[in-house]
Structure formats: structure tokens, C-alpha cells
Image (cartoon, rainbow, N blue to C red; front, side):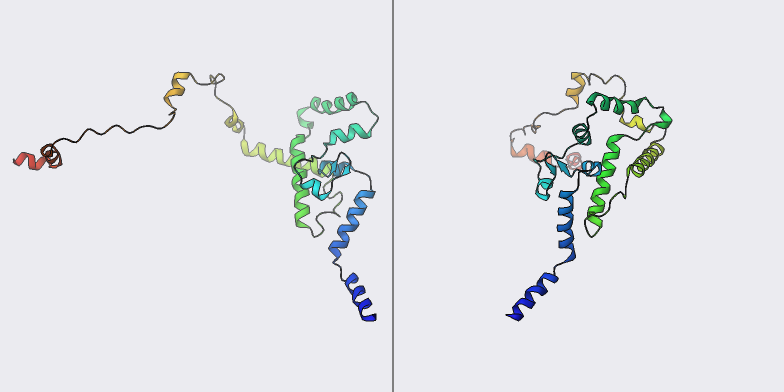
Length: 207
């Protein structure tokens, strides 16, 4: 009996630190309040933090940061929306990067930390805060602007006169509907005609 008790205790001490860390982080995550970083990373749903099964499911969608802000504050929704629109009134030299770009960068960084670190990025808090995220967005926009140049964006612009599409006659000329049938072969003629066709022009001259 003593040996069995020792082995059972040894098994308890032989648990991997990753499993215990995962249990601690899951318990800690359920206890602590939801932060804006969790919302932007897509870890929050209607009832709080998403479980691993819910995050993998395609039927459960995470909440957007705007929805969480409107729920957690007593400020009128119109005032919050006006503050979002006020960013567009800034001069071109002070404009912030596009919000969709910042969301994509934040999602990429979250996935990178979750795959690169041993604990799945669970202990990397504030490693990419809002100021660093805005700085990365500005650098990306400047890099794209330098790569495209002055007229590089014209690649994505259609030429004039194609707003209504091509005319029907021109469209038909460049389209083939169905399969193209091969021309019917002529019926077989007499053997003499076929023999004459097979002869070369030099032989015909000699005759």
C-alpha cells in the first residue's frame, strides 16, 4: 500500500508544467474581467471569454470592440460614434492608420505569439500595445506608399468608358459559348481520287 501511495504521488508531481500552466491561465482568464485586448484578439463572445471549442467553431462569432464598448459604458452611443467619426476630420499629416489594417496586424501578431511561444502567448501581456500597433500601421502604410509610387494606385482603376461595361457586339466576339464542333469531313470518294490526292506535285508533273 505504501508503494502504491508513493507512485500515485509521483504521478501527481510528474505532471507537465504546460498542462498546469494551461489550467492556471484558463482559471485566471475566467476570473479576471474582459479587457479591450481580449476583445480585439477575438477571445470574447456574448457570455464572456470563448472556450477552445467555441473559438474553433464557425457558428460562434466573437464580439467586435464597438459592441463591447457600447455595452460596458453609460455614454450614449451617438457620442461614441461621433468620436469615431472625428478621426476623419484630422489633417492628412495627423491621420491615424486604417482601422481594418490595425485589426489585421493585431490578429497576425496574436496568431504569431500563440504559435511561437511555449505557452501559446498566454503570458505576453501588453507586448504590442496601442502605441506600438499604431506605429506598425504607419510604417506599413508608408512602405506601401513608397512601393506603389505616385501612379501605382492607377493599376486598380478602370479606364474611362467602361462604367457600363463593353458593348454586346464586342462581348460576343470574345466569348465562345458551348463547344465548337469540328467541320464535317467529306464523304469518301473513289480510290483513284484518293490516290491522286496522296501523290506529291512532283509525281504529277512527271506524268
